[in-house]
Image (cartoon, rainbow, N blue to C red):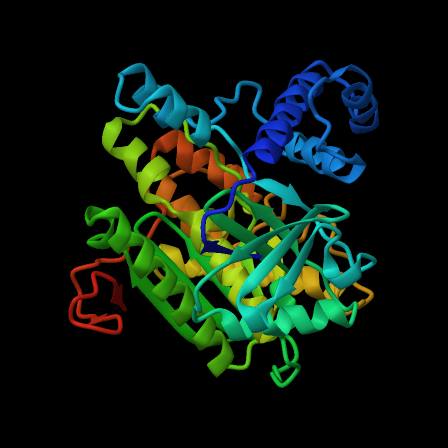
Length: 418
């Protein structure tokens, strides 16, 4: 999904925002009590006062908004603004304004012009908000480089082929839509050719694979970038995503494969430096989301695979490769196996073969590791993994980032390509 945030000429919908946000907070508390959406909507209509500006569709949108707040304890307006208010850095009125979430309505293809309450009018650079019959608020915004994209969205909405979700405040408007509508169908990939990436806080490793042949390997170093400022990191991250997708387009990749990761910030018990690297410097969500968006626009299919033991098995099977490239090769193998079974409908058994942790190791590998570890009991990857962890043996072939490389795109770039 793409969200475009646009500044608008100031309008006054404060009453609508206040009532909408009151419903969001009320619904959030009811969700914490275990009620379901339909029960909450009935409760809003029967018990809440001073919501006369909200019709059934706006109430439903507010309840849906509250359902997305999954945390058990939410500070509306943000923890940072709450602290600033308590320190006297912002007034009560400013804090109350910052607490207001945008009034958001999700669109549908069945709605007229893609959304029940909002209408795109890109010929005049504006969006019309119609909360009820006879009432209109004009959100006018300046021309931007996204105008052509928004005009195409408007045309498709008028034809009933897509829809959009829109949010509005007194100063901004937010337009969210599916980026796949811009896939023109001209991209001609090579069937079953894949690109796989292995993400780490210090590098991004990628391989392009056609069946069993690796046709491209690349490591993008982030060590120096991680020491720079936030805006520099954000800009370079998007440039990295652009490079990866352009490389995929160049090799006519049909599928993009990455690990499915859901890692929460926590204390890893290995010191502040390690925690900072994992929790702050590892901007995996931003990069994966942006790569997925670009792949959808090009027309590259996205496949996520299980991440467990990918680095270990990849390095054991590809001992002559660096650990990041070896992990990317293992991720590509898992993706290909999954795609053959569920995308191309081949009659193959993948039970236990995607992760392979309980699979027997071939004789050559067994003999090599028995000699290295001076042990006799090695039959499966799990046996070997347990022995290595027990003896604290390093199985990784680490990449040396001080080797010759080229800077990405410009001399000012802090991203190095190996």
